[in-house]
Length: 187
Image (cartoon, rainbow, N blue to C red):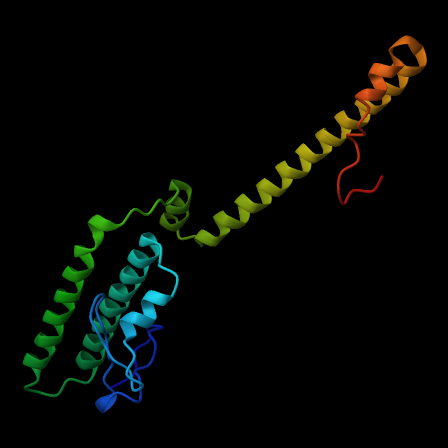
């Protein structure tokens, strides 16, 4: 059978017959040294529920893609009389799709409408991210410039107050923190 185009990990060669071993959450397995795989997993940092859901969604989507790929390869070189085998693959694909639909209620993905609009018009959604990052960098630079200008103005105002109103010098000096100097910025 041809290899799947999906980025699924290859089957574990140590398993019997090259079959992929899948263990469900809570299922107890024992390794060659006698330790429980469930015990080893509990020693690791617990996963965020959203991350667990995302991984489960990814696994189910890969399964659907694999089923469609199997259907395509069977249909491409289908000998006479093997329609039932193809029908079996179609039923497996339908089952995989229903498994995928079963996870839908637990998903809480928030996708910005702008990204969906990019996809609708056939553009790469990464372009939206790039435009957003550029806009944020420009806004950040503008705010930094304004902040530095206000700090410089404050420093000049404090210096002018100290010269023109010597009786206020002690109050101006107490509040004379040079705000125009930022970390990483030239003085």
